Image (cartoon, rainbow, N blue to C red; front, side, top):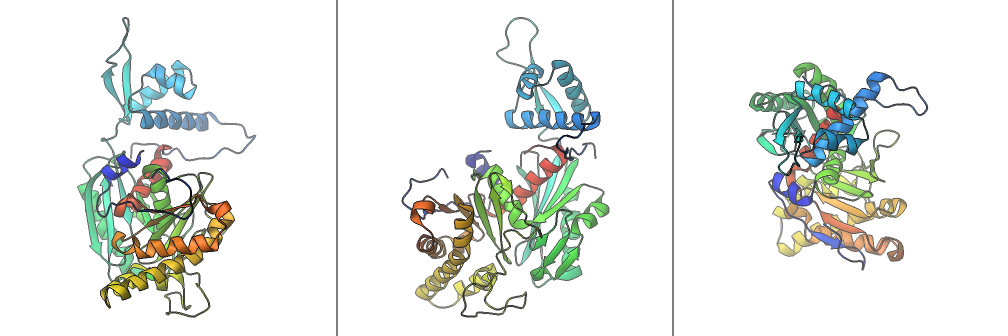
Length: 406
């Protein structure tokens, strides 16, 4: 998807601010069968595995092209016309693929019929649990276009109460869905393992909460739960035009990040890659963090802290506070940028707080703490996807997990 498409589909605080840290040129800003399953190198491929793979190839080609004939598909994915015809027939029966009609510029003879994914015939529900006062959710079509929105207040809510708030929000959104739901995607703060268990989310008071299992069993709909910053990184890659080596820093109730290297999301040995919020910044102490330490990055940079700072003092004091928060962020990011040689760092969160002095403080700190000849072309910018970045990432994860497309 292009950035223009993403801007059209997202709403809320949509603005893009780009700061160059070096002297380089400006950078371009339950009818569906799950298709998951990896094949071991050298292993014999079972017919059902091959068929799932071929289905995913067809769906991916149609998703990206928006109108291909059966012959086009055969050429695009490298399968025989007989195989394509068989697959397309099954997909049409499942209502997942639709016929658009005859190709307008068809040559004399048997005209080609164009096909597309049934983009408006199914829906996806996406939740963002990262805000400090509300859980937000959307219903989208398969293109990520938002058709319904809802939110539920969760200020000072933790533990079981916060889980029940997830259910309340899902009850509302699922009742609004006007087409079959492919899946539910949820972006949660904290450390989330590959099974969708929230291993630790201190700000929500969650520890080893099997949220994915709870949701899927309660609603009988496939669910995927992942770290909110990782979901945001997925959204930025698919809808925001981010590069293959990038870091998305998500600032909300807490602070986290998603790291993409070589086009692949990095999880780490304990599923905590990018969890920079509870790294102590500096040796000068600081406020007490929810995790029990003092001076964690979250104590400088979380939305509640920034909002409180913005409400106090005059403009000069506010600017100084935001700039210092940016400097602390830059101190945390510099070793990561240098170690991974990242090309892009993107901030996502309250635009009125992050853009300006905070972004500038981060940029200046990165510039002084990295080597210009190696990292001078690093781009530091705000996301253009606004507050929808996490839910759009949830859409990407459901599309990938349930349909095999992205």
